[in-house]
Length: 498
Image (cartoon, rainbow, N blue to C red):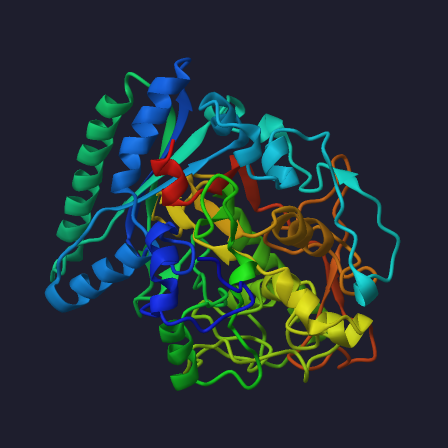
């Protein structure tokens, strides 16, 4: 059966969705929740028939949305761990499997591939979103392929994700080591299976990092994944019980992330995937934050000087523990810190308009600035399922260590969600207002151009202590894309029919 994709607040046990959730891969509507993962990038060999047979057999091992929920329940009740598996295909993967083109996903970015920098994308704001002239643009992400690691420059047909959690244990280090060893064995076994049909181009190792409160963090030390769209009743209930959503609604309709799978039957759905390996310059980031803090202190003459962590909150829009800087000038938020907006901070005197969380999720800023319908702004949201990689040292002595984020986002339309967000919001100096500047975390300037300085409040809630304009300071360039690809995560039903 087909479903109305305008629905949200879905009960995972709703019998109307049972057949669909049996064929929809896991990790789409809710994160798989495992702390350790392996990402295997593969290229099929020349025999399409043999490759299809392998994929069809492998489909029985893939974790569905319904099975993911059952596994989660078993873990919570009985402590039993389960291997989680995803499989997704690139355009070249569909071609290598000799799938009829009538069954190919049709997203423009998916069909072009991430390495195709000549493909033009229309990231023009719709209706009253726009206040400036836009043209379709090639390479809207401002990618530089010379920065990419060699494996990602080659043809990638598919991505297999294996994920596993640590067993409940007092000694987390032992449990983590056991999970890593288990995944290594699974990779070895899968390598043997694949030997006849595909080459493994690269294997990326992912691992969750947590702070002292058990919150998931990324390598700059900030809580990650707080404001992801939510689709399921159980997830929305958590928000309702921990602060509500009278200021911000975290729910999202299914069409934010689900699309019909053209290769499946009427009950087959999938999702488009953006994968990017993002290296983080941890030392450079915190050194620059210290310089930003010193510059603000010098110009403002604050009686209570700010430090690098406060400057970091200005960049990110949240303190390291997730507290929104728009709501208070110190950390220590007490709920799920997602029920807020910028109604009381229209000019960015608390949370700068260029801050990362405000650029990527304006929370009705486009309504205030451009009178754009909120539904349009909300339709740009993406679902993030990334995981950290590399060293766990958050205070390295060197810059550009082997550490960062294996970024993975899910969406129904790559061009109008991920690419729009990155190009029209994060990389746009004039969003929301003229000379706002780049997103300090992930904003990338146009090639061969120098990033413009952003403006920073001298003091929380005030820009004018001395009659002078706010502080200007350029902050960008501490995240670098080392490679990636666009994929489609097809229905299990389609894969079993190959």
